[in-house]
Image (cartoon, rainbow, N blue to C red; front, side, top):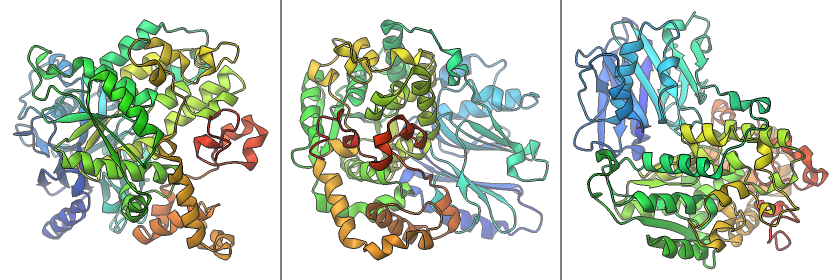
Length: 575
C-alpha cells in the first residue's frame, strides 16, 4: 500500500520542471501513506509520483514500475494477491524488472493493449485491492482503475489548463482541481476512448456480477463448508507479506474469524507455498477502547483462545477529542458514523506502527455481505434484504473501506480485508438472502449473521462466535458516542444549527454533532467540490436511506449508532 499522484494530458509548452516540482509538493501531502521511498516519472505526456509503503519486495519493487523498454510506467496503490497465478498464465514472456506483485499489471496490459474489449478484460482477472495509473508512452494512452469495491481510495479532477489529475487522497487535488471527485470503484478510465466531451466518455464499469440481481440468486444455497473454505482461502491469500503483520481484534465475530483463520496459517510463508517457516511466526492482535470497553473485554477472551500475542490499548475521551481535527483531515469526510469509528482506529494505528507492524488484517465487509447491522432484523423479505446488501456494498468505499484504509494509512499501516476478497464475494453473494435473514422461530437464527456463525462452529469460544453485533464506535465504549454528542452540544448553538442549510447548502447537517464535524471538515477542505465528495442521506444504525422505510419508527429516530435499534440491541434502553 502507498499513494499515487499523476498528471496526464501534458502539452508542448508546458513547463515540465515547474509541474514536476508541484507534483512532488502535492504528493508529499499523502506521504504518510508511503513513508519508505518516493519515486518520480516524467516525460512530455505524463507525470507520475509514488510514495511507497514497502510490504512485498521491500528491497526492490520501487515505483513507478517501468517496462524493460521504458515505454510503460505504472504507479499502484495496493496488492495483487493472485499475481503468481497471473504470471504463470501469461501467453508469452515478459521481462519483469522487480519482484513486486503489482508489476503483473504492466504485463497484462501489454498482452492485451490491442484487445477491442479494452483493459476491462484483464482487470476482471485481478484479485486484489488497488488503485493505479498506467501510462503508455508509445500510444500516449492513460489507464486509470480502481478495485471492484473501492477498498483503496482514489480521486481525480482537472486543473485549470484541463489536464487530468489523479491522487490517492483528495488533499493532493483539492487546491488545483475545482471538480475533484471520487474515482468510482470497479471502473476504468481509458484515454484512448476519450471523445473530447470529458473524462466521463472514457470511463467504463469493468466489474459486473450476476448476483447483484436477486432473481439470479433466488433459491441458491451455499453449504457451510463451501463458505468456510472460501473464506479460509481469502485469508490465506492476504497473508502475502515480507514485513511484520498482525490482526485487528475487537472481539466481535468478524475480526475474530479473521484472526482465527490467520492463526492457522501464521507459522508458514505463503510466498513459498507454505514450505518454510514464517519470518514472524507469532501472530499479534490489537484492540482499543475506553476503560470498561465491551470490545477490550471480548478481544481479551478471543486472543487468549486463539493464542495470539494480544495487545489491548486504552484511550481517554479527551485523547479522542483532541485527535478529531487530524482524523477528519486524514479520512476526508464529515460523515458522523465514520468519524466516530475512525478516531479510535486512528489512535490504534499509531500504537501499532510504534510496535513495528506495517500490515494488519481486518474484518470490514462482513456486515454488508451477511446483513450484520441490527436494522437488518427489520427487513420485510429476502428481496429487500438482498437489495440492501447491494446498496451497502456499493457504498462501502464511502464508509467502512474509507475508515479502515485512511485511519490506518495515516500512520503507514496497511489494512487488508479478507471478507471483500473477490472470490469470497462470489461465493457468499450468490447465496439466497433468505438463508441470511434472521429467523425468530429458531433460537440460533435469531442472531444476525447466523449462517456465517454456524459455518465456523468450533473456531471460536461460544461467547465470541455468538456475540451480538456491536458497531465499532459503540464497542470501544458507550461513553464515546455519548461524550461526542455532549461536546457538540456545548460547541454548537441552537441558532447555528437552525441556519445550517445557509452555511452548508450541500448535505446540511441535521444535528449538532454533524455540524461540529462539518465545521472541522470545512477548515481542512473549504471548496464546494470537496464537500460534494461526501454522500448524504438519513441513516438508522448505518442503514441506507431506502431501508428506513422498513420500520415506521425509524423515521423519527434516525441515528447511526447500533444502539438505536430498540428491541434488538441489548443496550438500546441504556442509550
